[in-house]
Figure (cartoon, rainbow over the protein chains, first blue to last red):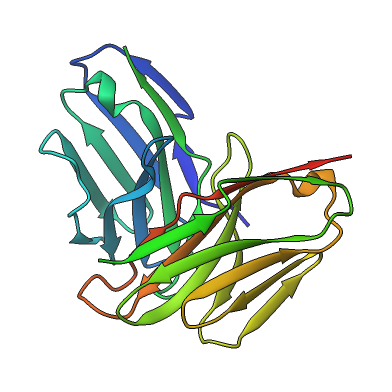
Length: 113
Length: 113
């Protein structure tokens, strides 16, 4: 079975550029989550969707971050403009139901120079 | 606010030396506690879900237990391939963010041959 698919796996860009991260959840999963992982702060939830609708975006650090889920099989996380402090590993996860285990992709390692 | 504290931060074991990892949590109402394993460069991989105090789950050399305040991940006769970061997360029954997990900082386990 295909797991959660994220692209790109690595992204290196210069400060001020727009960055778009992509995620394809597991088919049939109704919940999709975006996380950020850093050494200092660990794994932080940024935003999550239920049936393509954003439920909680309280973890989105600032207006430079936005996320969309136009359909059940695709989501994007966009950073515009990017800053060096946005450098981290970004994970997407999905689950069948809110109380079910979340299954993670292998992440996008983002470096902002 | 939900809090999850894992200890120790790092643990070094010799192959075959059994030990336990701790996850202490504070939530208004526990809906579920999750254990994950994370290998370098990979996303967290789901291991166990525990829903109520007294519950236990086992998988190969791993056994997870749950009380009203903490969970333990017992590792029996570990092998070098058990080396990874182990993450604990809680799902709070309270509030409006159904599906939202709060993660601990993780325990880095290293098993030497």
